[in-house]
Structures are given as structure tokens and as C-alpha cells.
Image (cartoon, rainbow, N blue to C red; front, side):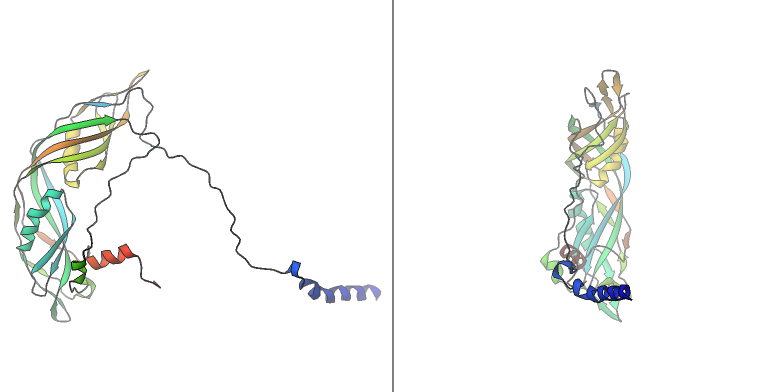
Length: 290
């Protein structure tokens, strides 16, 4: 009986003991600093060699045919007239001015929403057929890849959102019942010549031939031509104390390019693509509360 009374007294005292300040539970988030291990940057294209590869002969292909894709967004008013052209993918920069004029001459039937003609931003695709007539290497500087600095790709240019584009009244394509249709399109772009800077990584075998290429800075439309040309390039291979070995080399240079005429008789209308309103929202992030 006495033992039961002692147990009962202890149980009755527990709530009082639990209320003591030094035994109270406080739910506080306490940050615990975690020191992450430092990982030094490494360049996977580095091979320890005594001398790096160096170009010996760099011919460029002549009369190289190709089909080149151009993407753009055009602003069509409610009469189907092109008022603005914004290029979102272009094989090379000098093509824009000549092709923009051809697109302005193109006529469409207007987009329709709920039975009424409306203005829209319309994504389009154009396939240009032509060829690279010829080219030559003006300058090509080989350097060994930096062991502590991984290579960086040139960022893909994104069309700038202009205030005047945001002010144009436009119906979103998801609310359009009938897309604009093309009445007629035919484009011919005269040949042009220019000088173009390039930067790339080339893997050179011990026999002095290029077997792999990583483009760091080069217009998209010139890459197939350069790849085909580099298959015939020769190099002085990298050397170690044991002889020639396969190694990567960075090539910074400039080439002269002469393009032939380009033509297209097809323009494809798409439902998804760039628009200034979508680009501005993506740049600004989601709206509050999203």
C-alpha cells in the first residue's frame, strides 16, 4: 500500500515537473552550418603533353550545299498584313536584313477568334536552300586548353523585348480559332561575303587528323560546312616523351565566307514560338502568388 502511494505521488508530480522552464519544448529552426568540400574546377579536354596540336593545312570546302532553317515571329494585324518581324533563330547574322524584306512582302489571311479577324504574333519557319561557295582561313591560333577553366559555350542570343512590341494589341494563339494562312511566299536572297570569328575545340589524333569538334562560338549555319572541311585538315599532333598522342586543342580564329544565292518557296506557320508577352513574363518570373 505504501509503495502504491509513492508511485501515485510521483505520477501526480509529473505535470508540475513538465512545466519547469528548463524542460519546456521550443520549436525553433536552428540552422546548422555544413561546410561543403571544395571541388576544384577541372577541364575534361586537357591531356598532359609536351606540345599541343597545331594546324598544318586548313582548306575549306567549295560549293558546299545545304538547307538552312530560319525561325521568326511576325506580327500580323487584323487584315493579315505583316507589321513586325523578330528573328529567333538565324543561320548567320547577315541574312536578317534581306530576308526581313521578303517576309514584309508576304500576305496572309488574318487570324480569327470567335468569328472576328484579330491581330496576332505568329511563329513561322523558313527553309532556305543554297550553298557556301568558298572560304578561307584568315587566322587560326592554337592554344592548349586551360587545366583549371572548363570551356564555355557562347550563349544563344535571345530576342530583346521592345516596348513597342509589348504595346501592339495581340490575341494569344491559344485563343485563336483559325490560324492565319499563307497566300503566297517566295524568297530569294542574293549571295554575300563577310568575315566571321570562330572558337572551337578539336580533338587531334596522333596521326594528325581531327576526329571530334566542339563549337564554342560559331554561327549555326556554318557548322556543317566547317565540320566537312575539318575532316580534310591536317595537324602536327601533340607530343609526349613517348611520341605523338591524341589530344584536344583550342582554336581561335577568323574565316572569310562567300555564300551563294539562297531560295525558298515555303513558309510554315506554327502554333508555338516566341512572342514579346511570353518573353517578358519569362524574364520577369512568375507573377506574385503563382
